[in-house]
Image (tube, rainbow, N blue to C red):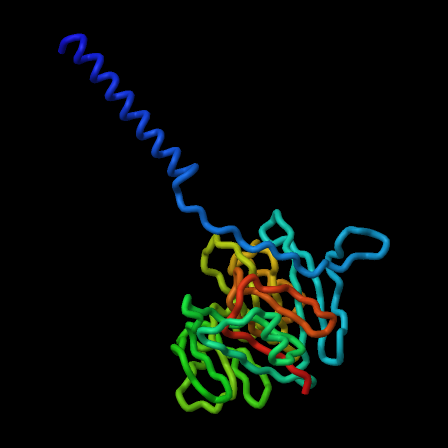
Length: 281
């Protein structure tokens, strides 16, 4: 190989390396698809002690109306970071439950509350990009969607809500259910003895609907993305909420709960095709 050939070969080698480096940098810094930023949400301020700006670790149960209690609680979700939980306890003696469903035409949680006149409105189960529920939906007795054989079901009859385990009690066509929706997984199994122990590292905002041992309905929203499902299951079982059964609803940007009382709660980030509503009897 003569000197001229050696020079050209070296230039080509360095040119090739430079081009590769350029395209790699452009892919990382300029040309790669960048996901859109999540909306900035400013949730309801956490209650504070009058004498101190430090947030309360646990407000305890505070009565907002007969049969309706609210609680803010700070917990360490992953051994390091603090998560804020908004928890509502509802006595079915005073309140009835319904399902709202608007397939293909989702509404913001605030509009659901306004249009239904609900005292409490909670995000529902999972849905597709076409804004239809992935699991079975029952609204005023009309049934649609795909019937899960796993997870759980919000089963509403004559306004009374029950969280139902679908493996133990699968839904059968023709059941006289007024309203219902299906979701997964069950975070606390019936009797409050076993939780969800599948290994997962995904942390997200979470919504849970549960029944306690006294038959009251508990709804909990974790408004920061710091719980895995396994960690949330373990926390529920170790908490003082006396959970008998708990079902995970849609989380992430969908998680939200709003109360008419005090116009407070945790807003969802997106419009929703399905919700659970709570009204005074």
